[in-house]
Length: 460
Image 1 (spheres, one colour):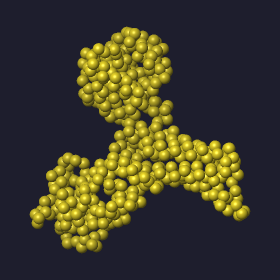
Image 2 (image 1 turned 90 degrees about the vertical axis):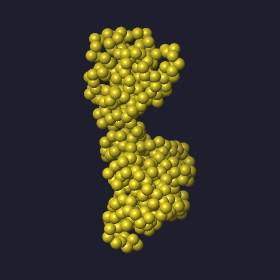
Image 3 (image 1 turned 60 degrees about the vertical axis):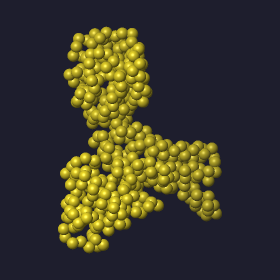
Image 4 (image 1 turned 135 degrees about the horizontal axis):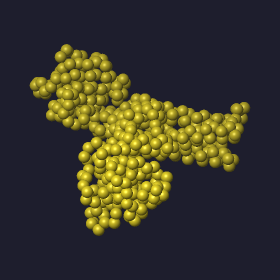
């Protein structure tokens, strides 16, 4: 159980805006608000009704500091499940900070990161996947990612977990009834029936885990590394995709010496773009460090945008680099097609194998639509596509627990095939049920929930 004190924090982003909000939650939320807010119309705070707005002023030492609206939400019909008061004031940081300080002086404690959402979870208003969805909505990078997060917040993933867990529970109950009451004439499931039911659950879980990569892409973005030899036009491509001059572009090879990371939405697909130093044998120590970083980024990439200067004939260095792309998740971009073609495209194809090729001119923007189509094809071929109604595992924690549940289910099925006792099979099934329950936060470990909620901003 958490410390049931009253907490307060600024709930709107740092900076200046038309409106700023201070959120107060806890058993003393209304009593505390009464010490800092003077409603225009007299109010009996002990009888204040939920879902009501009151105009008034923030008052400090008898002096009006700001005017605003006070919103009342009564437990349990609030975000946290507790009594909640929100002060909607003018959005200057000075007035918000001074008003928050008044709340703290009146008895509130400054909320920790994510503590309001943590209280919503601990009070049973939302489960752990829904709590994670709150952060996913705030940080969504695409319409699809937002739709998946909203679906998770409304309980789509929770319902899938509960349905899968219920199928496991049915098996456990059936097996344990026979174990505990052998003298009763109970309808015992045959090993074949148990095996069939286990196979159905395992198949469903395997399919969900297989879609976890899509959840990662739509939540975090497809890590896309732009790589190639010096002066191939990598930084020009980054600038074109971002529609801004983010990277310095010159005719001098080796201009980019460090990685540049930016986010972009191309054809509705969220990308985390990484521009890298040109790959070559370098004598300069700083450039060598940049090239080493390039290789590290390539090893971690979901997708490589390999940029080739098609206006130059192939060299031994170019051929060696192209050959490394075979069997990698890559799209080869034949750049500088606005200049006379001098690269042998047949040889390029032979060196790179089956990876797709797109002709572009990064300097002018030619071929960007074709690149977007190639990205969409990549997402489809790798089964990374999703819709707003998709039910996906969206983070490592969820996927890890699903894999643990799958491992226990496979162990149960193997035990069944080997003729093990029912109680041993049931033990694995119970462990699978526990792992599934942990996805939604059933019997959570404090260290895990603390880690989740501390990723949130203060005020949420």
